[in-house]
Image (cartoon, rainbow, N blue to C red; front, side, top):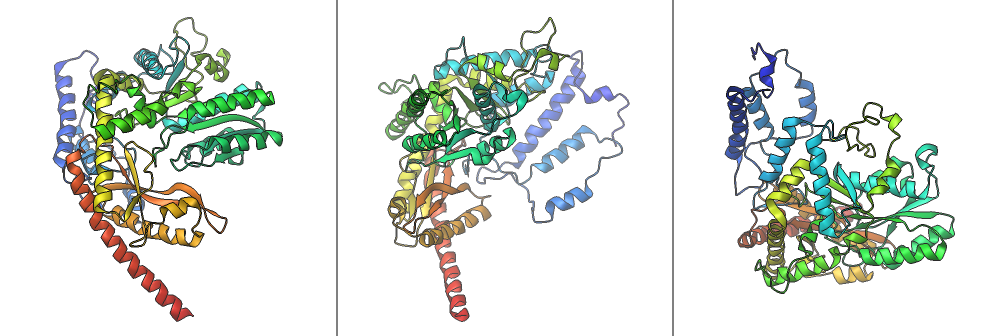
Length: 560
C-alpha cells in the first residue's frame, strides 16, 4: 500500500530539490535497467512468456480494476516492466515493416516535452513546443527545397493526419463554402493501388465517401501509372466531377515504390489548363521515403561516407526521385519511422503556409485562446484542440543526427538490403524477389511451386486467376510459419503487392513475404544467418504445402 501523506510526492518538484530529483532518477533507472535485463540479442522479442490466446484480453478485462489505494512507484514499475515481457524488440533480427527503434535523442526530446507538458495549440500554453515546431518546419522545408519564408506546417498524428489535412485543404480550395455548407458531392480524389489505406479513412471522415476515391493502376515498380491517372481524371471531368486531390506515394510501405511527382505535377497542370479547372492539390505521402531527401546534396561522385558501390547506386536512384518532393503542395515526414523518434511524431508540411488559413477557425470560435492580445502562435487550423509537443523530440533528433547521421543510418539499411538480395538469390533461388526494380530498404520475395517461377507470366497477365490464387496460398503458408516463429526472426508480409491481370480477364493481388531493414543493429555480417534461417522455413513451407495439397486432392477424390 502507498502511504504517501503528501500527494505532491507523485509529481516532479517545483523547486528542483535533490531528494525528489534523485527519487525520480532512480525510478527511471529502474525502468531502463529492467528493460535491459529483458533483452536478448539473439531474439526479436524481449524475454518473458505470454500466451495471447483467444481469451487473453477478455480475461484482462474481467480482472482489471482500479486499486482503492495507490501502490509504491517501485511496485508500479514492476507492473510496467511486466507489460513488456515478450514484446517485439529491435535487435538485428527485427525485420518487419516500418516499426523503428526510438533513438536516445528522440526519447530525451520526449522527456523534455513531458517535463513541462505544454499544449502545442498556442504558444502561451506550449511555448517550447511552438518554438521547436517552427524550427523543424523550417529545417525540413529547407531540406526538400520549399521556401522557408512561405512554407508552414505542424506536428500531427501520423501520415494519416497529414493525408487528412491535405484532403481538407483540397476540399476548401475547391469549394469556398464547404466548411459551412458541407462538402460538394462531385469532388474526387486519386491515389495508386499501392497507396496506404489511410486515404480511405479520410474520404469517409470528410464525407466524400470512398466511392469518390479513384484507384490508379501501378507499374511493375509499384509507381503510379501517370497515363492511367490522366485517363481517369478525364473520365471524372467528362461525367461532371472535379478532381481535387492526388496522393502521390513517395515510398510505399510494401515495395518502396515511388510515384513520379514531377510527372504528376506536369500532367495535372496541363489537364487543369485544358479543362479550365484548378489544378488538384498534390500531397506527397512521404512518411517513409521522404527521409531519403537527406541525400539531396550528397556528393555521390566523391562519396565521402565510403558507401558501398551497389548501395550508393541505389541511393542515387532514390534521390533522383525524391528531389522532386518540392513539387508537392503538401507532404509529411513520419519521424516515428525513419526519423527514429517515439510514436507519435509526424510532421505535416505545406508549401504555402497561407493555405492553412483555409482551415482556420474564426477567433470567436476559440474565445479562450483566439483573440487574446498576447501569444503569436495559434494553431486553430489543426484538427486537434490539444497537441503534444512532439516537435521537441523531432528537434532533438535532427540536432543529434544531423544530415550526415541520417545519411549513415540510411546507407547502412540499404547496404544490408543489397547484401540480403544477393544472398537470397544465391542461396534460395526459389524465393523470387518481386520488387527487384525498387532499391531501398525493403525486399519482397514470393514462392512458387518447386522448380517454377511464374512471376514474369503473372505480370504479363498470362496466368489464370486460379493459378495465382493457388500460389498465393503457398505464400500464405510461409506467412503462418514465419509468424509462428517471429520471436526468433520477425519478418513482415503483404497480401497486396501489385494487382495483375489474369488471362481470364480478372485482377488479383500477389502475396509476398517481406524483409524490412529497420534496426540499427542489423549489419551486413548478419545477412548470412538471416538467409539460412529463411531457407529452413521455406523448406518447411513446401513440405507443409505439399501435405495440404495431398489432403485436398484426397478429399476431392472421396467427394467425387
